Image (tube, rainbow, N blue to C red):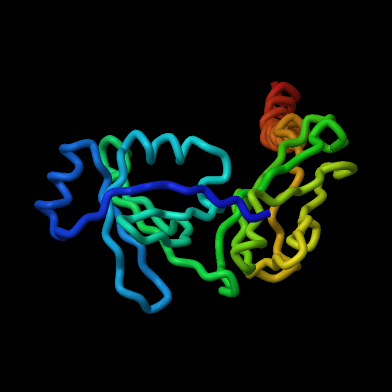
Length: 220
């Protein structure tokens, strides 16, 4: 399960907004490695290199061996700050991890076997409440993704946290009874009910008018 990627970054010795802006003008993204009650390590990484890493599958659950100068650090990406207008990365945070540390990390959820789901075949829709699930595990056990099997689910069925295939050594932070997805009825199945109600209301409103018209005709 452990997926470790080695990257080499630039050592950064000057902090502050001015230094960070200078890094970005040079095509670099400033960052920091922190955690385990140790001194933070400042660095910068090429914007192109970071973009290439982010495009790869499993970026947020991958372990990195980060080479800064003569030192190497094992870490996972904790946060990426982006520009409010361009949405481009402007700062990256890595969290140090040790082999025996118990981590809490968000893992992407993949819903599979949609073709084997009767509810979807009937026109229902998958209401995926959870696209990521926070789990607790050691670094070596971090899964790239979690799988939810939709086989056999009908309209109205729900998927609980207990239905997720959690690998050995991985457990969810939330309760196993938590609903993470549901097969919702298609809107076309709800329309006839609304139309029937509208027709009934129209009939109720029309009845007094018809009675009044008949009474007027009889008197004439």
